[in-house]
Length: 446
Image (cartoon, rainbow, N blue to C red; front, side, top):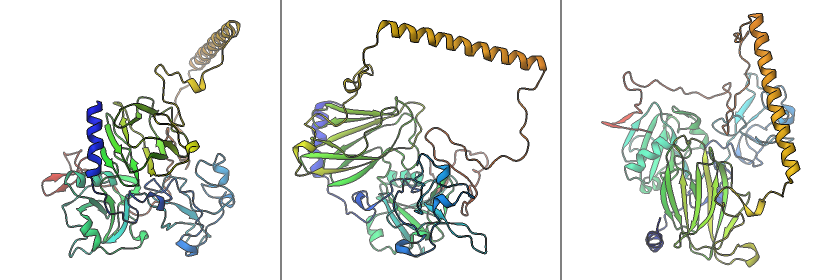
């Protein structure tokens, strides 16, 4: 993008009026402890199923070895389990939960109602009596509904808000609808989205309402602080995405903090450029994640550009930003620099260059590698000949029922199915496998 275009974007930023910051709004990220729609990243300290000590007390994770999840099953702490009884979501369920003392009905776990664990952009659960509707814009239903399917539909219609209900219904509305809306307990929005088993889509007569800018592909952000999500969030981003956001709050510097970052490979990239010069400051990708903690840049405005390749598909990213008014010099990097150096063409990086290697050491390593490869190939060939000689079948069906062990793909959440709440995915209409649902004669599409 050329310098004149970037300068034009910067001049346009002051014309945008800041929107009202509702509780849970993208403009008030400091109120949330979660940035994933299902709270899998929750690391707070609530240890009861209800807020402020209400509900059932949770069992300690190091005392639940008889169940599928315990501190012993999470030795690296990836899921946040340990010698504590705080609510967590180790299996990629719809929200954090914990084990409780088993009841006479056989219930041994419960979801946790955590008021601070709702991703910014989710405005809450609201009553929808239908007369009048809680959101007054267009609506539709879908057997493949996800949060982002509804957000995209309402965004295309020009509305500010999107509401999901009963697992399959989508409604659009404006902030004036929300102003007269009646809130409901968070636990009332408990229906699984028909199109995604790890997301909640409202409840019976209850709307889960979101700002449509969540997961949008472009935007101009001028509020003092806010959250920017990768395209299609909270769904995975798709292939061939080319999105950009301009961040220009008032201040002398910017502070960015990446709350989530998961890109599929090095070809899916997030670039940070200074506005209006267009100078490249930083590049992050699938094998080069951003640093942990705040990243401070002495720039007034920033252009973020995300591109994915033709195979792209991963969770993406969520980052918070805030403008800094008065900063200490030793805490903010000079203009045009950052705490992590920008990528150098060719893959080299001046801050982590390898130490010199002698010629003898290089030759020795090469010979060792060659011998190792030949040995492995010979072993595999001999094993194959032995199997063929015995006329054994190379693939035999397993015996007994499959274990309840969850499977894990690269960068994906774990999932088990032994305690999902009600809800089911319905098949697409016959002859229309791509149909998502309809609003009159319009179709909700991915």
